[in-house]
Amino acid sequence: MTAYDSNNIFAKILRGEIPCTKVYEDEHTLAFMDIMPQADGHTLVIPKKPSTMLLDADASVFAPLFASVQKVARAVKAGMNADGITITQFNGPAAGQTVFHLHVHIIPRWEGVALRKHAGQMEQADVLKAHAEKIKEAL
Ligand code: AMP
Image 1 (cartoon, protein in one colour):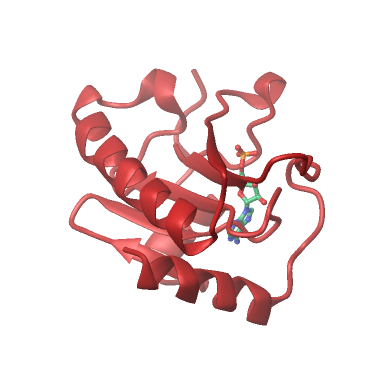
Image 2: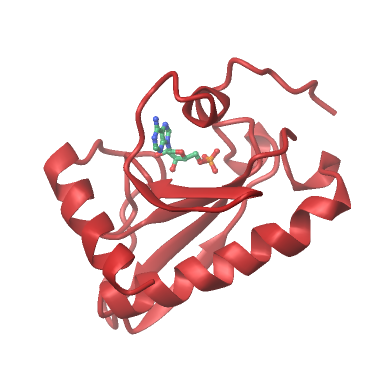
């Protein structure tokens, strides 16, 4: 199992060292817009407690993490007027994980609309902000 690197990008976001487009925060979790969204409204939820992935996480993070995932996923679906929600979570480079702080992807889906490439193209900050506003209104 890989040791937790406290300089990973999500650890820096949690410490406020780099910005994010925040959607929701509570004592245990933070949700923010994915900077390279696979669909408009693609949101990430992370636990504040450090772990690289689901496999090495302390089981106590899962209840608050998935409570936030459900809360934010409902708001993403309503705020983005989506037909459905895909939830993904990658463990290890071979599985497609690129940031080594446990995170859950919430990706809105519309009938007939294909997903964009994972970690593909950067979205403009004002577009992410507009989507975050819609999601926050639905929280
Ligand atoms: P994964 O490949 O599952 O580790 O997912 C990492 C996700 O984080 C990708 O979808 C990236 O687009 C996203 N990402 C990387 N850097 C940032 C950042 N600074 N702010 C928001 N999302 C990011």
